[in-house]
Structure formats: C-alpha cells, structure tokens
Image 1 (cartoon, rainbow, N blue to C red):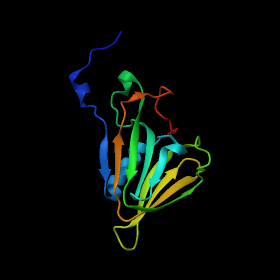
Image 2 (image 1 turned 180 degrees about the vertical axis):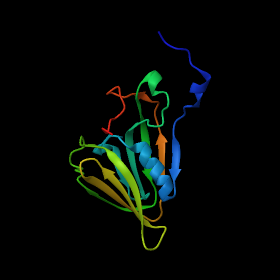
Image 3 (image 1 turned 90 degrees about the vertical axis):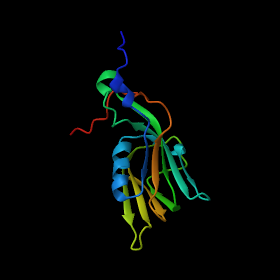
Image 4 (image 1 turned 180 degrees about the horizontal axis):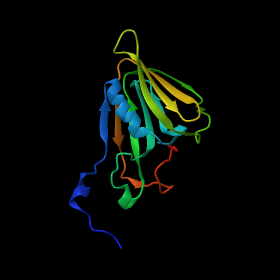
Amino acid sequence: MTEDARFEDGGEAPLNLGALTQEDLQVLSALIQDAVLPVSEMRWFRDERRFAMLLNRFRWEDTAQDRHGAERVRSLLVFENVMAVTSQGVTREDPEMILSPLTLTFLPDAEPPSGLVEITLAGDGAIRLKVEALEAVLKDVTRPYRAPSGRAPDHGE
C-alpha cells in the first residue's frame, strides 16, 4: 500500500549550489560526503580550465528517508578557473577504480584569490586543483534513486 503525497513533500528539489568562499566549499563538502564515482567519471577540460566529476551522491539533505528509504542522486561537481591538476593514489589506467570523496578544502595562496582545492579521497588518495580563484558548483542532474544498500552510510559514530 502506498501513501498519498503530502503538501510538505513538495519542498524537495534538486540541488544547484555554488561555492566562492571556503565557507561555501564546506557546505558542498558535507553534501558530497560518501559519494562514489569511477575514475572514468572525472575529467579535466584543460582548454576551458574546468574540472568535473559525475558523482553518485548520497542525499544527506533528504529529510524524508524514514518514508521512502535512503536515496542517492547523480550530481555534477564542477570547478572553474583550474590551471593544473595533480593526484595521489588515483590510477587513470584503471577506469573502473572507484573513488569516494571525503572532503573538499581550499588552501589560499599568499596572493588571493588563487589557491589549491584539495579533494581528499577514501583510501589515502587525493586530487589537487591549482585554481586562479575558487569557483565550484554542485548540481543534481538526475532524479533521486533508492540507494543500492537500502540504508544511509554508517561511520560508526
């Protein structure tokens, strides 16, 4: 048996958030925690100075999990003004390698607004973006779907 939709359920909408400051980036960092993606779903567009990742993001902001279960959504995480990309613990030769971003951090240079964006990955990996200025967007690009595990990630806290 299914429940009828309720008026308050209409507030759920896809995320489309930007980050121009360290504080903004902390919000995006919290929202991508426990996301997963294969290495093949990230790309640096050198000529456009853009770095993008297509994430399977857990919907931490979803307040209705008790009704419909845990959900994920495909989301684009895009960084602009990217001048260089380096990584540690990421093997591009294995396109099926699964990455899981843990945190996003901005480390300003001595001459702002340039700096480094560090994407810390589970398993001691990291991606570092040298940026002229911090500019990032997190945008949901599909409808939410039931998390394959059927439950929220558990950090044993």
